[in-house]
Image (cartoon, rainbow over all chains, first blue to last red):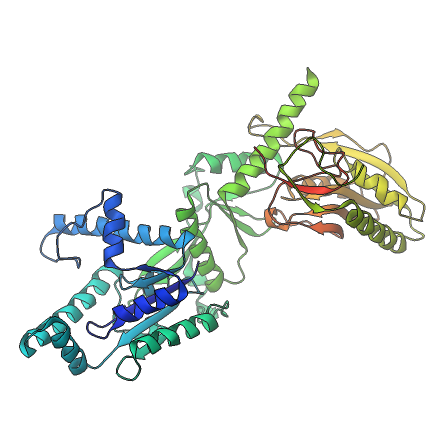
Length: 323
Length: 181
């Protein structure tokens, strides 16, 4: 899947740029309209009309909006499995932050220029246009803070920033496409944690907590198989921290299902749908970035089924031969 | 028999032809003959898939050797949860102090081979190495050192040249990808 995310200031022309990029690359354009329509097909409606950012007033309303946003993120991840996407807004740069081939673009223009364009495009009085641009900027800021706990204006979220006062909208699209082609090559991992901090980042639960309460039948089956081959294993013995907020609080962590001490190998099983498998893949990528010395392997639904099927076939044969 | 598909089966996609396999095995035979020249070599075929490979491999070798076979039980979903892997047919020869080369048709998860290696190692051979016709690294759970290998294949199901699906297809002279029903 190819992913280009475009975040834009209101009035910067980012929407047109995104459309050009989608047309020229053949990537599927994902904007507010396609998401609203796509979710509506699944019977999921926008909770509060004309208002997507989370309001602070009402807890119940917040819950509905959060669920809607979660559904929206799942919808985007689903689309990304089978399509190349140009994602306009919706926090795309954060949703695909851990997918290295993605290119994250920010489209900007000076405030006065954006006001001028908005006046022209919507035939507004100057005061109204100023108010609208400020309001839209505030909304985006709020959305990023409340949904992702992130700063929308943090330029580190983006790989490429384009000022549409300096470059026309179609040229901006061409620059993005050129940048994407260069960028889509796998990147070297950078910015791992400082080596000294490694120990603090790994959480080991106390031994008595280890009760082998499997979360999923497939895990129990896998454990039986390891027992059969006399391979020592531990169930979810360690938790790896993957993501911290600006205050150093852990916001994402990962506990691989099994650890094989003799192989010094962590194993994560997934018998889930591709969507969840994709998320696990993302976590494993992140884990490999942060903990390059830890061996971790994902066994997916197909791999696991073929393992079990292969072995059941052996069993079936044995029975036939005996008769 | 030529490379044409038997069984009227269109689920097979040929990955390696008879000629490619023959050439590969000749290369392996030469290398093994050179590496084990002057040593007391025991080839251990793992039943049942490896027999076709073992026959052709030994025919391409030009040093003396002994042949023996071993077979172990496999895990299945129906296996009793207290069951463990065991040897269902052991070696007849002693391998203590001798150079052992385990011959496999395929190495995928490494689970059964890992067990086999631990078992054979306990008999104190002078050396213990692995030769496999097909290697599926993508399915590996347990690392096993593959010293000689014919073909690397991705995570697909393969049949032919000793590899079976429900005992079918072993006698194919080529190796094919099989899309299971």
